[in-house]
Image 1 (cartoon, one colour):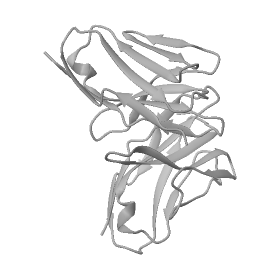
Image 2 (cartoon, helix red, strand yellow):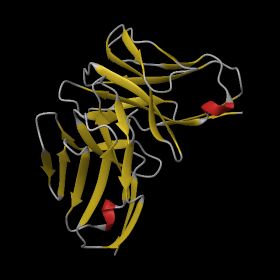
Image 3 (cartoon, rainbow over the protein chains, first blue to last red):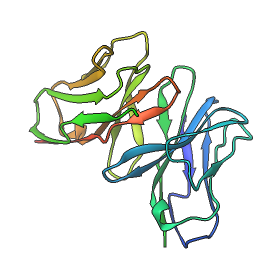
Image 4 (cartoon, helix red, strand yellow):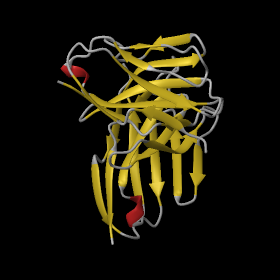
Length: 111
Length: 111
């Protein structure tokens, strides 16, 4: 089954403790991206990647890192999480056509 | 900076009605446009993708159109059903490959 898999589904952590949210797709897509969704603000893009070893900042990249060492994986790294990064995070991928496939989301709470 | 407005923000209708959801962009320079559906606590599902060379797309009871001159898109839902209840989001891709999302229309269809 074609899908984008994010883990974990839920995560509670404390300020300053490094964490990684994993994202993997099995559709051989070139494009992958990360979004955060906050009430009243909608979805905002954090980072995106057009292909392996190519990453670019989205609208809200501060406090986040990404890497794209393999085509299928695009992890999101929070080196020193802060409470304002409490949010619902989505990973997505798309191929040449452009239709975007989303993961199920990661609800992150930073205390 | 590109901003996306979706009207109405919320809509409650009886089953069987034909619906029109609107999406407008402050900058009419939109390339690809997608409409998504989001169910509570879940990720987004792409419904329709209008590519840069197209003006509309249809899938079953759904029809989406894009007027690039005005920067507006419309999602038409025919013969609405309770299963259509969800939040509908539009997203436009600008000339930097970034996808900008609207804040959504929350739809409830009651029997």
